[in-house]
Length: 335
Ligand SMILES: Nc1ncnc2c1ncn2[C@@H]1O[C@H](COP(=O)(O)OP(=O)(O)OP(=O)(O)O)[C@@H](O)[C@H]1O
Image (cartoon, rainbow, N blue to C red):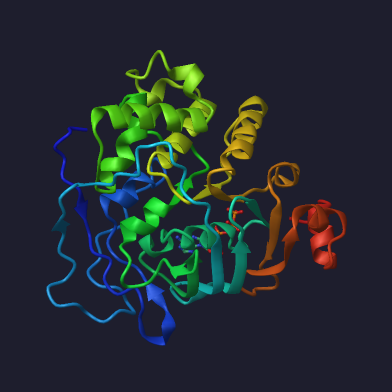
């Protein structure tokens, strides 16, 4: 990526529509940096189904790159709590979540568990406004980051994405781009300027936090695609960390990895939670127990939309769940 790239940001428009539903808008490059490898960019859409037309349509706005002084220094982001309130979600007319409320406390790891199709990933994607990339998607409810609604019309989409990063199931570094450039890629795409020294510092800091620095410090100019799967996933974590998010969302981050790489990522999460609040979707009950302090059990039963059956302290959820369905699920009796 060249240094003179101009960040092209697409205004979010009004995410609220009639009936309290929020709906889709055009993807920006900042969204595409966090999109899974191989995922087709969301189609360019004119106007959301539920939002009133805006004069002039969704024209791109070229914003100058801005320097954010606190970004590239050692100061950690203040730990933040993420609060989802009454989240209901649809794909077209298909309701997939029903009034899901969950507090994900600052500095803790919250695990989302439940059978396939119960809406865990949809919920996760709502937490950083990726749900709206799907053309038919809409939602109702609030997502508060330290009390501020990330869907508020006064907040830029890129701001929400910077504060709430995402790591996907399949590692998705830019394969031909160097390890160094992979880490700093998010800066330009979120409109942040940093000096060479700041970038050097940020790369070392982010790779160290992601548990990868020692393995790659002598080959930072080699392509990210040359790393092993587990290393690539940690590179993606480093890329997310480079913009100093307050929350890191992880959607089955170890499901494509071998047990050794999985253990390294889990250890990395243990260190990371000191500087960032983590929400992880996992099908691995042992992993949920190992890495999380809070746990939420989702279920979509008998054609009903997904909802939370039970949530709370992870040890209690596994040792003494209140609901018999939770007991059955965490003991492998279904799902
Ligand atoms: N892009 C989409 N378009 C239409 N329906 C979708 C889309 N993505 C998910 N769904 C539907 O939403 C529901 C919830 O899916 P979601 O992927 O959130 O569940 P999940 O619990 O994460 O499942 P898994 O554990 O298998 O990943 C499912 O019925 C799914 O088919």
